[in-house]
Picture (cartoon, rainbow, N blue to C red):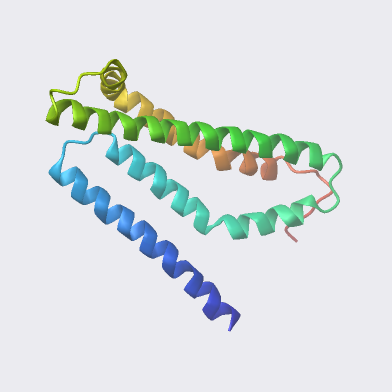
Length: 159
């Protein structure tokens, strides 16, 4: 019964991510949206890491036993993860808003606004912002992996 519920719990996640993927592909085909592949890559990385988060945190639970001063380290890594998540959301929002501003700027020429024109300028730096978004997305779980690599020598997880 537990296995069935576990498998069923993944169905809405796959449906959500599949819907996001299909809509992104359709939007990318119909409009020239250079930030869309970067956002899709960020979501794909997040999805893949999300699938393995349970196993990873089970590993961390085994790591926590018998380790001194780990609560401080976990606190710093936790706060760092919150900071990285905020930066990831900010970059994603900036990329999405730049695409919306470009769409408004090109399809509604009578709408002239300085904030819109500045967001359109952000669109010229999509590659560097996209690379930064992917790098931050990869760094976020890397902090937990570094912690697991440099674990306390008295905590033998593997036999």
